[in-house]
Image (cartoon, rainbow, N blue to C red; front, side, top):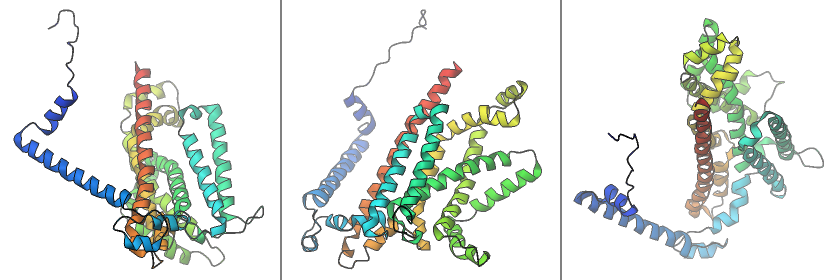
Length: 366
Protein backbone atom coordinates (compact mmCIF):
# COMPACT_ATOMS: atom_id res chain seq x y z
CA UNK A 1 0.00 0.00 0.00
CA UNK A 2 1.05 3.59 -0.55
CA UNK A 3 2.17 4.88 2.89
CA UNK A 4 1.08 8.38 2.00
CA UNK A 5 -2.42 7.14 1.08
CA UNK A 6 -2.11 8.73 -2.34
CA UNK A 7 -3.94 7.20 -5.27
CA UNK A 8 -1.73 5.78 -7.97
CA UNK A 9 -1.96 7.67 -11.24
CA UNK A 10 -4.30 6.03 -13.75
CA UNK A 11 -2.81 5.43 -17.15
CA UNK A 12 -5.35 6.65 -19.68
CA UNK A 13 -5.67 4.69 -22.89
CA UNK A 14 -5.13 6.40 -26.19
CA UNK A 15 -7.80 6.48 -28.88
CA UNK A 16 -6.10 3.80 -30.95
CA UNK A 17 -5.69 1.53 -27.95
CA UNK A 18 -9.38 1.84 -27.04
CA UNK A 19 -10.40 0.97 -30.61
CA UNK A 20 -8.11 -2.07 -30.62
CA UNK A 21 -9.30 -3.33 -27.24
CA UNK A 22 -12.98 -2.99 -28.15
CA UNK A 23 -13.14 -4.09 -31.78
CA UNK A 24 -9.90 -5.91 -32.66
CA UNK A 25 -9.08 -7.93 -29.54
CA UNK A 26 -9.13 -11.27 -31.44
CA UNK A 27 -9.01 -12.51 -35.05
CA UNK A 28 -12.77 -13.23 -35.12
CA UNK A 29 -13.68 -9.84 -33.65
CA UNK A 30 -11.38 -8.14 -36.16
CA UNK A 31 -13.08 -9.92 -39.11
CA UNK A 32 -16.56 -9.07 -37.75
CA UNK A 33 -15.62 -5.46 -37.06
CA UNK A 34 -14.20 -4.95 -40.54
CA UNK A 35 -17.17 -6.68 -42.21
CA UNK A 36 -19.82 -4.79 -40.25
CA UNK A 37 -17.94 -1.52 -40.69
CA UNK A 38 -17.71 -2.02 -44.46
CA UNK A 39 -21.42 -2.85 -44.65
CA UNK A 40 -22.34 0.28 -42.66
CA UNK A 41 -20.16 2.46 -44.89
CA UNK A 42 -21.76 0.96 -48.01
CA UNK A 43 -25.27 1.55 -46.63
CA UNK A 44 -24.37 5.12 -45.68
CA UNK A 45 -23.02 5.82 -49.18
CA UNK A 46 -26.13 4.36 -50.85
CA UNK A 47 -28.46 6.33 -48.57
CA UNK A 48 -26.51 9.53 -49.20
CA UNK A 49 -26.74 8.95 -52.95
CA UNK A 50 -30.47 8.15 -52.75
CA UNK A 51 -31.45 10.83 -50.28
CA UNK A 52 -29.14 13.70 -51.29
CA UNK A 53 -27.27 13.39 -54.58
CA UNK A 54 -30.03 11.86 -56.75
CA UNK A 55 -32.94 13.37 -54.83
CA UNK A 56 -35.58 15.68 -56.26
CA UNK A 57 -36.28 18.63 -53.99
CA UNK A 58 -38.78 20.56 -56.11
CA UNK A 59 -42.48 19.58 -56.08
CA UNK A 60 -42.20 18.32 -59.68
CA UNK A 61 -44.11 15.08 -60.17
CA UNK A 62 -42.54 14.27 -63.55
CA UNK A 63 -38.98 14.65 -62.24
CA UNK A 64 -39.82 12.47 -59.23
CA UNK A 65 -41.07 9.70 -61.49
CA UNK A 66 -37.99 9.83 -63.70
CA UNK A 67 -35.35 9.70 -60.94
CA UNK A 68 -33.96 6.82 -58.91
CA UNK A 69 -33.43 9.02 -55.87
CA UNK A 70 -35.72 10.27 -53.14
CA UNK A 71 -38.61 12.54 -53.98
CA UNK A 72 -38.57 15.22 -51.31
CA UNK A 73 -40.82 17.15 -53.63
CA UNK A 74 -43.69 15.21 -52.05
CA UNK A 75 -42.87 16.80 -48.69
CA UNK A 76 -42.42 20.20 -50.34
CA UNK A 77 -45.85 19.83 -51.94
CA UNK A 78 -47.75 18.42 -48.97
CA UNK A 79 -45.90 19.72 -45.88
CA UNK A 80 -48.71 22.03 -44.79
CA UNK A 81 -51.24 19.21 -44.98
CA UNK A 82 -48.88 16.92 -43.05
CA UNK A 83 -48.15 19.46 -40.30
CA UNK A 84 -51.64 20.95 -39.90
CA UNK A 85 -54.03 18.29 -41.18
CA UNK A 86 -57.48 19.43 -42.26
CA UNK A 87 -57.23 22.81 -40.55
CA UNK A 88 -58.47 25.41 -43.11
CA UNK A 89 -55.59 26.24 -45.45
CA UNK A 90 -55.94 30.01 -45.26
CA UNK A 91 -56.15 29.85 -41.44
CA UNK A 92 -53.16 27.61 -40.84
CA UNK A 93 -51.15 30.57 -39.55
CA UNK A 94 -53.31 30.29 -36.45
CA UNK A 95 -52.36 26.65 -35.89
CA UNK A 96 -48.68 27.48 -36.49
CA UNK A 97 -48.76 30.41 -34.05
CA UNK A 98 -50.56 28.37 -31.39
CA UNK A 99 -48.04 25.54 -31.70
CA UNK A 100 -45.08 27.93 -31.58
CA UNK A 101 -46.40 29.54 -28.39
CA UNK A 102 -46.70 26.17 -26.67
CA UNK A 103 -43.22 25.08 -27.79
CA UNK A 104 -41.66 28.34 -26.56
CA UNK A 105 -43.43 27.93 -23.24
CA UNK A 106 -42.12 24.38 -22.93
CA UNK A 107 -38.58 25.65 -23.55
CA UNK A 108 -39.03 28.34 -20.88
CA UNK A 109 -40.38 25.76 -18.43
CA UNK A 110 -37.26 23.65 -18.96
CA UNK A 111 -35.07 26.40 -17.44
CA UNK A 112 -34.48 25.51 -13.75
CA UNK A 113 -33.87 29.17 -12.85
CA UNK A 114 -37.59 29.82 -13.43
CA UNK A 115 -38.70 27.16 -10.94
CA UNK A 116 -38.13 29.28 -7.83
CA UNK A 117 -41.22 30.65 -6.15
CA UNK A 118 -41.41 34.26 -7.40
CA UNK A 119 -40.65 33.21 -10.97
CA UNK A 120 -42.69 30.03 -10.73
CA UNK A 121 -45.84 32.12 -10.29
CA UNK A 122 -44.97 34.01 -13.47
CA UNK A 123 -44.35 30.68 -15.19
CA UNK A 124 -47.74 29.38 -14.10
CA UNK A 125 -49.41 32.58 -15.26
CA UNK A 126 -47.58 32.25 -18.57
CA UNK A 127 -49.00 28.76 -19.05
CA UNK A 128 -52.53 30.01 -18.36
CA UNK A 129 -52.09 32.76 -20.96
CA UNK A 130 -50.45 30.49 -23.55
CA UNK A 131 -53.02 27.71 -23.22
CA UNK A 132 -55.80 30.29 -23.42
CA UNK A 133 -54.22 31.75 -26.56
CA UNK A 134 -53.78 28.25 -28.02
CA UNK A 135 -57.46 27.37 -27.74
CA UNK A 136 -58.60 30.83 -28.86
CA UNK A 137 -56.46 30.53 -31.99
CA UNK A 138 -57.52 26.95 -32.67
CA UNK A 139 -61.22 27.32 -31.88
CA UNK A 140 -61.67 30.84 -33.24
CA UNK A 141 -65.10 32.41 -33.11
CA UNK A 142 -63.75 35.54 -31.38
CA UNK A 143 -61.81 38.65 -32.41
CA UNK A 144 -62.84 38.18 -36.02
CA UNK A 145 -61.41 34.64 -36.24
CA UNK A 146 -63.53 32.11 -38.08
CA UNK A 147 -64.73 29.17 -36.01
CA UNK A 148 -62.94 25.84 -36.53
CA UNK A 149 -64.40 22.69 -35.04
CA UNK A 150 -62.12 20.25 -33.22
CA UNK A 151 -62.84 17.66 -35.92
CA UNK A 152 -60.72 19.82 -38.24
CA UNK A 153 -57.72 19.91 -35.90
CA UNK A 154 -54.81 17.73 -36.83
CA UNK A 155 -51.12 17.34 -37.51
CA UNK A 156 -48.45 18.64 -35.17
CA UNK A 157 -50.73 20.96 -33.11
CA UNK A 158 -53.00 18.05 -32.23
CA UNK A 159 -50.06 15.79 -31.36
CA UNK A 160 -48.48 18.41 -29.09
CA UNK A 161 -51.62 19.49 -27.23
CA UNK A 162 -52.80 15.92 -26.64
CA UNK A 163 -49.36 14.99 -25.27
CA UNK A 164 -49.18 18.14 -23.14
CA UNK A 165 -52.61 17.67 -21.58
CA UNK A 166 -52.14 13.92 -21.30
CA UNK A 167 -48.90 14.18 -19.31
CA UNK A 168 -49.63 17.46 -17.55
CA UNK A 169 -52.94 16.32 -16.06
CA UNK A 170 -52.08 12.65 -15.55
CA UNK A 171 -48.97 13.45 -13.47
CA UNK A 172 -50.76 14.89 -10.40
CA UNK A 173 -53.48 12.24 -10.70
CA UNK A 174 -50.79 9.55 -10.82
CA UNK A 175 -49.07 11.00 -7.75
CA UNK A 176 -52.34 10.91 -5.80
CA UNK A 177 -53.01 7.34 -6.95
CA UNK A 178 -49.51 6.25 -5.90
CA UNK A 179 -49.96 7.82 -2.45
CA UNK A 180 -53.44 6.33 -2.22
CA UNK A 181 -52.13 2.86 -3.00
CA UNK A 182 -49.70 3.17 -0.08
CA UNK A 183 -52.40 4.50 2.24
CA UNK A 184 -53.20 2.68 5.47
CA UNK A 185 -56.90 3.33 4.90
CA UNK A 186 -58.24 0.13 3.27
CA UNK A 187 -60.93 1.89 1.21
CA UNK A 188 -58.51 4.38 -0.38
CA UNK A 189 -55.86 1.73 -0.96
CA UNK A 190 -58.38 -0.65 -2.54
CA UNK A 191 -59.87 1.97 -4.89
CA UNK A 192 -56.44 3.22 -5.99
CA UNK A 193 -55.09 -0.29 -6.53
CA UNK A 194 -58.22 -1.43 -8.38
CA UNK A 195 -58.10 1.56 -10.73
CA UNK A 196 -54.40 1.13 -11.49
CA UNK A 197 -54.62 -2.60 -12.14
CA UNK A 198 -57.80 -2.28 -14.21
CA UNK A 199 -56.47 0.44 -16.50
CA UNK A 200 -53.03 -1.16 -16.88
CA UNK A 201 -54.72 -4.39 -17.96
CA UNK A 202 -56.51 -2.73 -20.90
CA UNK A 203 -54.80 -1.67 -24.18
CA UNK A 204 -54.88 2.03 -25.02
CA UNK A 205 -56.71 1.33 -28.25
CA UNK A 206 -59.59 -0.18 -26.25
CA UNK A 207 -59.74 2.89 -24.02
CA UNK A 208 -59.87 5.14 -27.10
CA UNK A 209 -62.67 3.08 -28.66
CA UNK A 210 -64.70 3.22 -25.45
CA UNK A 211 -64.19 6.99 -25.13
CA UNK A 212 -65.11 7.59 -28.78
CA UNK A 213 -67.97 5.18 -29.45
CA UNK A 214 -69.28 3.76 -26.16
CA UNK A 215 -69.10 6.71 -23.78
CA UNK A 216 -71.39 8.96 -25.92
CA UNK A 217 -74.11 6.27 -25.71
CA UNK A 218 -74.05 6.52 -21.91
CA UNK A 219 -74.47 10.29 -21.84
CA UNK A 220 -77.92 11.93 -21.84
CA UNK A 221 -79.03 13.41 -25.15
CA UNK A 222 -78.58 16.98 -23.93
CA UNK A 223 -74.95 16.40 -22.98
CA UNK A 224 -72.48 16.12 -25.82
CA UNK A 225 -68.67 16.23 -25.53
CA UNK A 226 -66.36 16.73 -28.50
CA UNK A 227 -64.39 13.70 -29.64
CA UNK A 228 -61.18 15.66 -29.04
CA UNK A 229 -61.91 16.07 -25.34
CA UNK A 230 -63.15 12.50 -24.94
CA UNK A 231 -59.97 11.12 -26.49
CA UNK A 232 -57.75 13.52 -24.54
CA UNK A 233 -59.30 12.58 -21.20
CA UNK A 234 -59.07 8.91 -22.11
CA UNK A 235 -55.31 9.36 -22.60
CA UNK A 236 -55.10 11.29 -19.32
CA UNK A 237 -56.81 8.54 -17.32
CA UNK A 238 -54.79 5.85 -19.09
CA UNK A 239 -51.46 7.57 -18.48
CA UNK A 240 -52.37 8.28 -14.85
CA UNK A 241 -52.33 4.56 -14.03
CA UNK A 242 -48.84 4.10 -15.45
CA UNK A 243 -47.65 7.30 -13.82
CA UNK A 244 -48.91 6.01 -10.48
CA UNK A 245 -46.71 2.94 -10.71
CA UNK A 246 -43.75 5.05 -11.76
CA UNK A 247 -44.21 7.37 -8.79
CA UNK A 248 -44.73 4.43 -6.44
CA UNK A 249 -41.35 3.09 -7.50
CA UNK A 250 -39.83 6.46 -6.65
CA UNK A 251 -41.56 6.56 -3.26
CA UNK A 252 -40.04 3.21 -2.35
CA UNK A 253 -36.54 4.65 -2.81
CA UNK A 254 -37.03 7.10 0.07
CA UNK A 255 -35.73 5.56 3.34
CA UNK A 256 -38.29 5.12 6.10
CA UNK A 257 -35.86 6.81 8.49
CA UNK A 258 -36.36 10.15 6.75
CA UNK A 259 -40.13 9.84 7.12
CA UNK A 260 -39.84 9.08 10.83
CA UNK A 261 -37.40 11.95 11.26
CA UNK A 262 -39.77 14.36 9.52
CA UNK A 263 -42.69 13.29 11.70
CA UNK A 264 -40.56 13.61 14.82
CA UNK A 265 -40.04 17.26 13.90
CA UNK A 266 -43.80 17.78 13.99
CA UNK A 267 -44.54 17.67 10.26
CA UNK A 268 -47.94 16.40 9.25
CA UNK A 269 -48.34 13.60 6.72
CA UNK A 270 -49.08 16.10 3.94
CA UNK A 271 -46.02 18.17 4.86
CA UNK A 272 -43.86 15.05 4.91
CA UNK A 273 -44.90 14.19 1.38
CA UNK A 274 -44.59 17.75 0.04
CA UNK A 275 -41.28 18.72 1.65
CA UNK A 276 -39.44 15.42 2.21
CA UNK A 277 -40.75 12.42 0.28
CA UNK A 278 -41.96 13.70 -3.09
CA UNK A 279 -38.91 15.87 -3.94
CA UNK A 280 -36.64 12.83 -3.56
CA UNK A 281 -39.06 10.41 -5.21
CA UNK A 282 -39.69 12.63 -8.23
CA UNK A 283 -35.96 13.20 -8.73
CA UNK A 284 -35.42 9.43 -8.73
CA UNK A 285 -38.03 8.82 -11.46
CA UNK A 286 -36.81 11.39 -13.99
CA UNK A 287 -35.72 8.70 -16.51
CA UNK A 288 -38.98 6.77 -16.10
CA UNK A 289 -41.04 9.96 -16.38
CA UNK A 290 -39.29 10.97 -19.60
CA UNK A 291 -39.85 7.46 -20.94
CA UNK A 292 -43.59 7.86 -20.25
CA UNK A 293 -43.55 11.30 -21.87
CA UNK A 294 -41.93 10.00 -25.06
CA UNK A 295 -44.27 7.00 -25.06
CA UNK A 296 -47.31 9.28 -24.76
CA UNK A 297 -45.95 11.51 -27.54
CA UNK A 298 -45.56 8.53 -29.86
CA UNK A 299 -48.82 6.85 -28.80
CA UNK A 300 -50.84 9.82 -30.02
CA UNK A 301 -50.56 8.19 -33.46
CA UNK A 302 -53.22 5.73 -32.26
CA UNK A 303 -55.88 8.45 -32.37
CA UNK A 304 -56.03 7.94 -36.15
CA UNK A 305 -57.96 4.74 -35.42
CA UNK A 306 -60.80 6.84 -33.99
CA UNK A 307 -60.81 9.27 -36.93
CA UNK A 308 -58.54 11.95 -35.50
CA UNK A 309 -55.64 13.04 -37.66
CA UNK A 310 -52.45 13.64 -35.75
CA UNK A 311 -49.09 13.86 -37.50
CA UNK A 312 -49.28 10.26 -38.76
CA UNK A 313 -52.92 10.62 -39.72
CA UNK A 314 -52.23 13.84 -41.61
CA UNK A 315 -49.59 12.02 -43.63
CA UNK A 316 -52.21 9.47 -44.60
CA UNK A 317 -54.42 12.33 -45.76
CA UNK A 318 -51.55 13.59 -47.89
CA UNK A 319 -51.06 10.11 -49.35
CA UNK A 320 -54.70 10.17 -50.39
CA UNK A 321 -53.51 12.03 -53.49
CA UNK A 322 -53.03 9.14 -55.92
CA UNK A 323 -50.39 11.02 -57.93
CA UNK A 324 -48.02 11.26 -54.96
CA UNK A 325 -48.91 7.99 -53.23
CA UNK A 326 -45.84 6.17 -54.59
CA UNK A 327 -43.56 8.40 -52.50
CA UNK A 328 -44.89 7.36 -49.11
CA UNK A 329 -41.39 6.40 -47.90
CA UNK A 330 -40.23 10.03 -48.06
CA UNK A 331 -43.33 11.09 -46.13
CA UNK A 332 -42.78 8.58 -43.35
CA UNK A 333 -39.10 9.55 -43.15
CA UNK A 334 -40.18 13.18 -42.72
CA UNK A 335 -42.53 12.53 -39.80
CA UNK A 336 -40.06 10.01 -38.33
CA UNK A 337 -37.50 12.83 -38.31
CA UNK A 338 -39.97 15.08 -36.46
CA UNK A 339 -40.63 12.38 -33.86
CA UNK A 340 -36.92 11.56 -33.53
CA UNK A 341 -35.74 15.16 -33.10
CA UNK A 342 -38.43 15.84 -30.50
CA UNK A 343 -37.79 12.64 -28.56
CA UNK A 344 -33.99 13.02 -28.74
CA UNK A 345 -34.15 16.61 -27.46
CA UNK A 346 -36.33 15.55 -24.52
CA UNK A 347 -34.07 12.59 -23.76
CA UNK A 348 -30.89 14.71 -23.74
CA UNK A 349 -32.54 17.32 -21.56
CA UNK A 350 -33.65 14.67 -19.07
CA UNK A 351 -30.10 13.34 -18.81
CA UNK A 352 -28.81 16.84 -18.12
CA UNK A 353 -31.57 17.48 -15.59
CA UNK A 354 -30.94 14.17 -13.84
CA UNK A 355 -27.24 14.97 -13.43
CA UNK A 356 -28.09 18.44 -12.17
CA UNK A 357 -30.71 17.32 -9.66
CA UNK A 358 -28.87 14.26 -8.36
CA UNK A 359 -25.60 16.19 -8.26
CA UNK A 360 -27.26 18.89 -6.20
CA UNK A 361 -28.68 16.29 -3.81
CA UNK A 362 -25.25 14.68 -3.33
CA UNK A 363 -23.70 18.09 -2.70
CA UNK A 364 -26.36 19.01 -0.14
CA UNK A 365 -25.97 15.63 1.60
CA UNK A 366 -22.25 16.30 2.08
